[in-house]
Length: 173
Length: 173
Image 1 (cartoon, rainbow over the protein chains, first blue to last red):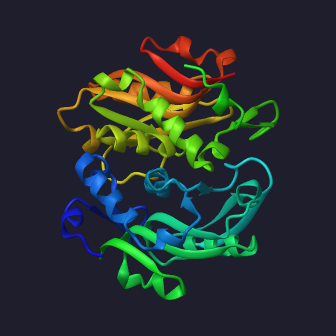
Image 2: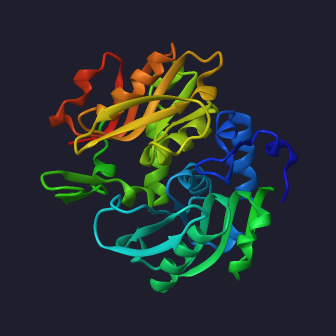
């Protein structure tokens, strides 16, 4: 799905957070209530969520979208967080980012239930390292990834080629 | 406002993220759609939001609440983020945390408008260092802080004594 209206409100910053990266900033959309509502409505209408039993949103910009989507759909919200942020026993995995590397964790308690089918929500898909990391955590825990919903997709980086599950994006570059 | 029902679902972790800190974990509430909806409804009903022209949510757990509140109230959502996360020109300020120190930033573009009255949203109020940091940024930008809405308040740390604006919490310890 491509929305040229939302597209106009994404700001682009060359060489952020480091040289050679063109950063696409979703914040102006969130700062406009009509645009933010439109983005969430568009994302919520993705067929990926029909089958999903729970939503995993990724630290931290993914939280800005995943929480509203989970609330609207009345589905459990689970967070994949950066090191040192989640208490308790964790599923952990590391990944290579477009710039640098990092690891993500999900609380074991959050996956210790009858839900099997998870949709992943984030703000942006670049090379797909972050999403692959979350997907691997879910698989390690015996869970199934139903699909990925993101606001912005950087198609030239071809992150979607890493995944066999469906991917819905609202704005593409 | 005190909700004993939500209170029961907050998990407590002694000595996290460091020795001597009792961490109150809101994630089990977010993992239960009914409880999460109840928490957001309770927060949204705070009179603090009546006068607020925009909502500032704090990186990263504050995003999980501030985004849904902004969407429900159709108010602009602005983020206060950790170092290196926001592109463009920034208002910055540093603060002392219950454990360690950090700094937060808000994009100048996000405050470069006619909104003057801001409500701050976060998950938890401890000593109040984070909120004071955001409040100072807003004041530096010539803006007014209308109040603070948090899910959890650690009353024994008396963070609210630092602030002259109203503070609404849903769960107190």
